[in-house]
Length: 548
Ligand code: FRU
Image 1: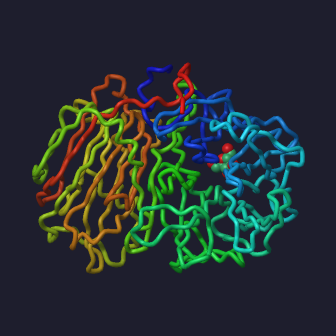
Image 2 (image 1 turned 120 degrees about the vertical axis):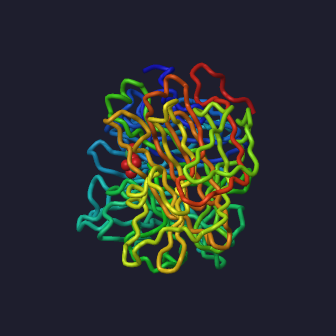
């Protein structure tokens, strides 16, 4: 335990100590980035009853200074906790929070809070008006299933809208829309934005527009003014995973229709991340005109262990998100600012990794690293055939066909956080299959050998990469390693897998980084860049507040 535990991250966002879960109210205001987050100021567990909004500020989304909590449970409408919510800019530029309060009777209600002094770019103090709550618990909604207001947006009729998660008493999980003239009195729209009987309660809705296919700039408000697509994201309690659909948002009816007819169960939608993340939330960064996504990556070792370490939960590296050039899915990429942490670089050009081969990447301390590799696949004919009748479950396939199970084209990829005897390692890799006459590219992060500890959750994670491998003949992998986090971007951000790992050898700082190929065919590494990363200043106690 203590500052020197081997699992403490060096550049992922976390408070210095105690518990953190969802990102809340991210925004860019007067040159400063703000991140608020679900925070238990007393200990490293979630702690029903006393959640606050922690608050940190940054000018680069990488180095952060901690400020006092923005919201604490100290009013009748949030006496038992200040739960998740979002920030919205009013027409005069003032930010306002909509957030869930657990009120004195333990009902979930929606509250507002305003900056005490909007001319302070650090927005240190927040004021809760006495007229809270602004949205009371509806009759037909379960008392503890009404929460997580989204960023609000204005329709062409001039009315505000906000999306709120609601579990109906009949068991339906839904996302309701409320409308308001003045941000104070809100009226429920009869038609929900989303509704499903099968997926159960959904949380933390996020609705935002995307620019045209391939355009990397972000857009601010939801609006059906124009033909643009929107994204609706849901966090699903039963799977603890986030799912999103691309669709049409109608700002007259306030309905959302996914473009793919994958039905109403959002578990059939796309995943932002096939690993261990939840409760993501995006914001429009007006500084760099991009949309940025935050998501929470919880611990996955036993509670007594993280209580002993004194901290729990990180946020993934902020990711830029945009629509791919075919308009089929979102692409995600670590914000460019992360590159400011790069120091020692190791490069390789044109290496070949033969069947059964391993190449060590020497000269980079493998506990804090950023690795980018491009694998070229000279021949695809060796690809393994998958039974055409088989229902394809990528996670199960990663479990059956792990890094050490020889294949045709792949498995090839990286071994990270490997011990000197390689007994402990996390493998991040691709494998190409043929299925019904088409090539399918599988991406896996396999944690089963990541630690010798038996009490840790260490599954294989997997997702398919939507890439035409026959045409492209190469696939890229970028992996960010940060002590207990392995965050990997396959195919230029088409498929992302974030994992929390707890190697036993972490304390020895003996971490090897290797490339491997267990396919029968050779793969060519047309490019490899590996950087050791500096530690960022993330909420370092006693550190000064940023100056701007
Ligand atoms: C999601 C969530 C939200 C809630 C918050 C409480 O992780 O359960 O629905 O507002 O966490 O901390």
